[in-house]
Amino acid sequence: MKKTVLFSLLIAAFSTVVRADTASEWLDRLYRHYNDAGRLYVRFEQKTLHTVFKKSDTWRGEFWVDAGRWRLALPGRVEVYDGAYLWVYRPSEKEVQKQKTARAEIPFRPKEVLGKLKKEFRREVVKENPGLVILRLMPKARDAASPPVVLAFHPKSFLIHTMSWEEAGDS
Image 1: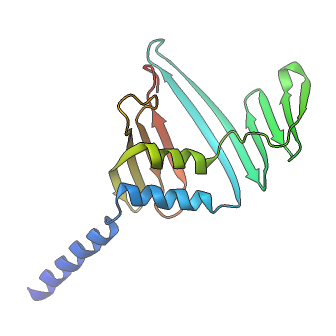
Image 2 (image 1 turned 120 degrees about the horizontal axis):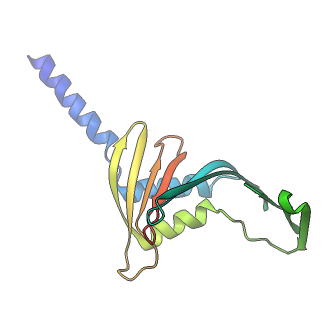
């Protein structure tokens, strides 16, 4: 009987340790992970559900950034910034546009997106287990233009699985 009780206490203590992280701690860890990354490569899928028109659009893309250079590939368009020039290629138009720029705006900066979520959103843990953490993020300001966001990621690799929100009836 003593062994069973001790084992039960150990399981209860272990589950408390695993679930000890708050939503703020999780978001801080995620932010540090992407902030410290020297390189980033992301393959992503965006799915937009249009509730009014009862249809959905799905498209895939790739994004790569390293030392101030980046490449974004989307359906029908590829953008490349080499540190001095921004190149935009549209296969349908069979042309490349080249623009000299001291610094082209990187279209996806996890550090900035996560920084905004840390600063402007209240957060709560919806689900937390060894395979997935789901956070619900609500704007702190009542009149904020940003909608609530649901963010799901792997707790060890910090690979973002899903980031979703609703806006003007679409999600």
